[in-house]
Every structure is written in structure tokens, then in C-alpha cells.
Image (cartoon, rainbow over all chains, first blue to last red; front, side, top):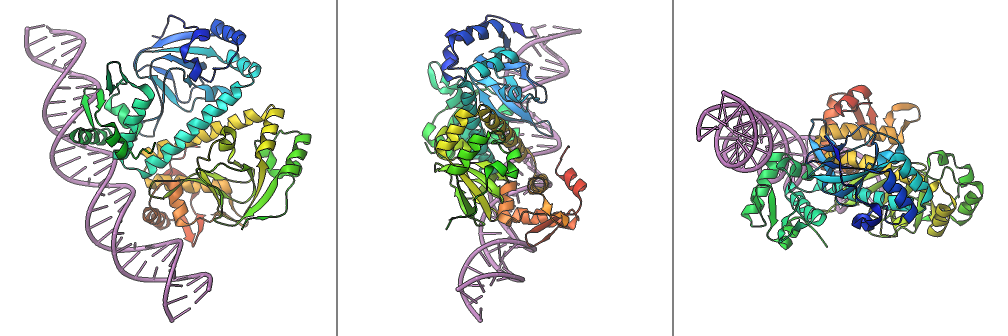
Length: 237
Length: 237
DNA sequence: CGAGCGATTGAAAAGACTCAACCACCGTGG
DNA sequence: CCACGGTGGTTGAGTCTTTTCAATCGCTCG
């Protein structure tokens, strides 16, 4: 099911500049490379399950991953999107508790898994790593609080516009078509980001199409009018 | 407006066991006491404002404080409730950025303010403090994610039941009346916790009263049937 | 006493959800 | 090859929840 494949080298990893591991020293990087394992996950495969302790620190090298929680009725609420260089499962690992969230690949993804021991050794040896983790947690908490306010107070229409801009921001656009989002989501996943029912999402997408804000073609979404979409989404910057 | 008053001593503070400062050493505690300032805030007074850098690390000694964000239309969404021993403003202080949230006293509160310098000195000198902060951030992020899913997927009725139980859990009950919540909130504040309109909150409270789940008397709320309320709120533990 | 604020209630409207049907596409197996 | 079934997407209709607007009420404070 999950195959170990080509193993990227942390020392030369281009995504490390964005990572919490960005200022780990040479020596530790070697230890990291020698103890880590790397896997490819196919689209849809689950990397981490809510309620289960993660087996290590997952580091996304290539691909796109959704972080989500499952509600009472089994509906998924996506709480975060991970991209190259992002770590997954670090919270549960640090606290020694079951993971509060699930993670699954949105497309084929290459993920490095750093053993718990290595991670904790790193944490002890590298003084700034804990500060990097604090920064990451702070940023994620900030985003989460923002999301709370928006879900509580903004209508679906605004939240969808916001979500589309987030997707562009996070995963960028296709090579050769700067208006087409590079990520392909099912309607259900998109609804899971916005926090609404599938049907409501579909209708609101249809509205946006009528208003020439976007166009869709299967799962490919093009943003036709960025500034007007930003206005709909109440985006300030 | 804000008066400096009696100054509690960290070394003997009974709330320190719950605090991120719980394992700061004797010497550092003395430095803390000698540099900190303490203020009393009256009910409603703002301790910290969204968008403004905090002037220090606030440590709630006595009282009750709401942490909230203000939405587009000016409506407040309460994202967290602080009680004795909780710290406020630590995120913005650590990151050196404006506060992402506001904080205001729900009742007269005694708050110690630790200067930024002292806090960072503490952080450098005390190895475990950063881990305490990571624990705190993790817990708060977990709560925030939980809240996201609930606001997105649960009806007001369930969220209100949950909120009432949270209030009991957080602030406890009155001396001599273990069913009466010790915290007194306006309807607007309660609505701000649940994430709904005031009128909807009032109606749902009225429903609960009819069902003999609670009783209200001005702002005093009594929980009459804890287990049934927990059932309404979908609480598992 | 009157102004003003917070709480409550009613009525109407809007927003979002659910249910159901239908379509389009795709791959499979007869 | 084509019929078939399954999945994901779309649309319509009706309903339910929640919000909004408006009016009223009670209380407190100057």
C-alpha cells in the first residue's frame, strides 16, 4: 500500500528554508537523513488518523495534504492545508498524545517520516527548534481563531471567495496558466474547507461562474477576476 | 482608570501550579516580583486590544477575562476564557507582533504585568519554559480546532449546551450553590461564546428553561440537569 | 420622571440544509 | 461492443434554522 521510494536528502532540500528545521546544523541533518524513512502516498491515502498517535514527525516533501477533523455526522471539516516543507503530526508527538486531527494526501505526495527519538534528540540539541515550533503554533492558532470568527459571522459566499484565494495562495497556479489553481479538489473537499454542505457549495460556485468571477472545468478552477473575488471575500491586504 | 494596587507575590502564588511559570526557579521568581506591575481592571475594562502590541505578559491573578476577536460588523466572537493563573498576550509578545485578539475583564480582575525584558530573560534562563509554552499553544490550538468543527457543523442548541458546561468547567459554581454558575455574562457575551445572534441565544435559553435544563435569574444561570444538558451538548466524557 | 441600556418577544425574511431526482462520466464485466 | 452500476456533480423543491427588524418591557441611574 505505502511504498518507500526515492529518499530526498534534508541537507539539500529546497523546502527547508520554509521549514521549522531550517536552522538545524549539518551534523544533526545527517542523523536525520540516516534515521528517517520516506513514503509516497497516493491521492486520498491517509497519512495520519485522528485519535491515533503518530509514528513520527511527518515532513511533506512533495505534494499536497489536507488536515481535517471528522464531525459527529461523519462530515469532514478541513482545518489546514499542508504544502512542501510543512510538518504534520508534530503536536501529538510533542505532547505524547493521540493526534487531534487526520491528514490525507490530496494528490500523490512524498512524505519523510522522522522517528520520534530523532525528533526529540533534535529538540534537545538544537536550541532554536523549540522557538520555531512556538512560531508555527502561534501562526496556526492565529489562523484557527480567524477561521472561528469567519465561520461564525460570515456567509458562505464570503467564505468560499476567501477559500479560493487561500487555495491560490497556498498551492499556487498551473504552469502556463496563472489563473488556474494547481490544486484539484472534490466538491466535498471544497465544502469541507468552507464549512458548508456540498449542495450549497455547488450553488455558490455556480453563482460565481455566472458573475464571471471564476470558471470551472471538472475540478479545475480558474480565477477570472481576482480583485473582484477578493472584494467578495472581504480581503483587506 | 487603571489603578496599581496590592501586589501578589509570585513565589507564594497559589495559581502558579497551573501556570506556564510553574517551574521557574526561586531566583527568577524574585526578579519577576521586583520588575512586575499589578493592576486591577473593573468589569468591562479592556486589558489588551486587537492590533496593538501588548506592553508585557499579563498574568491573571484574580478574576475572569474574555479573549475575543471583533468581526467585520463589529460583533465580538469570544475565542477563549481566561481564569486564575492564565497568561494573556504571550503570543504577540513572543512573536513581536500586534495582538491578534482583545482581552477584557468579565468582572473586577487583578492582573500582573511582566515586562517584556523579564519575560525573555526568563525564557533564556529557564529551559522548560519554552516547553510549557508549546504545551499551552498546543492545547489552545486543539480547542480552537474543536471550536471550528462545532461552529461549522453543530446547531446553536448544541453549542449553547456545550458553552454552559464550559462555563461551569472553567469558572465553577457559586459557594453554597453548586448549580449556579459563578460567572455572570450579558446575553451578548453568551452569544459571543456560542457564535450566534443575541435573539437566537435568548430564545434557546428560554427553550432550556422550559425543558427544566437550566433556570435563569438576571445573569445568574443555574444548571438544573447536568446530565441531560450534557446529552444536548453531545458531550462524551 | 425620563433617558437609555439590556433583555425579551413577535413576525418576517433570508440563508443554508436536506431530500430527491437526475445527469455525466468512467470503468468493468458480460 | 455495449449495458451496467457506481461515483461525483448538479439542480429543484421544500423545510428548517437562524437572522434581522421592530416593538415592548423592566430596570437603573442621573
